[in-house]
Length: 316
Image (cartoon, rainbow, N blue to C red; front, side):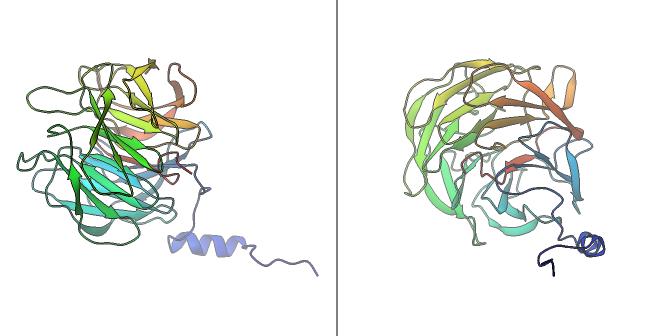
């Protein structure tokens, strides 16, 4: 007789959907996730397959609006760092399950769209919007809920809107606001070892409200204040200044923030452009310098939400 072990009937699939345990997408390093943001996406959780062009698919409704947050995570769990004033909460989602965000713990401070970065084990947050500890870097162990712990200090004051990405071993913190000016500084940390950040080099321009994506070799920064469309890149293993990569189709800032990538493509989604917020999703091929290409659209215009991937930013 045929072996039907592991094959679901349609009725079983529909039942699983009703229980919100059915994964309507393929996991394994190809899912990009977008959560919250200002505009019509504020209570939405959606996804795309990074290797396939197309619009975002809705994957659930949040119980409350989420904005001013940044995303990171592992291959199974997404971490959300909220950054609104007086909100120090850290939340998580299980990437392969529908459902609301779940409390993870707290950080010691809030920051305005803090840089979030991660490998498979640790997620880090950099910056302090209160000005109390503006060089702070904290971390959590992704698999274990709990409050953030001290990791070390940044090389420069970061009071808002930097961006983070990296490889499995080295994390990068790019740009940001140093008050009153933006910075072009790139810093790096070693995920496995707590300690202060070290100088890596400089971006081609000083910017905050940027987005960055990476695979295990290369990191690419795009956009920022002034609605710049510039993208530049660095080779993660080698310290040095950034080099021009290409252009976004529309200059903008305040993206869906977080390293949303697989090993090949990086995603730039949403943001605030010259004509207001947008629903645009664009992609780049990380290994090949060039202009961003159209990918599709978010379910609604949005900015300042969270982005992440189950490839923990292209590192699988």
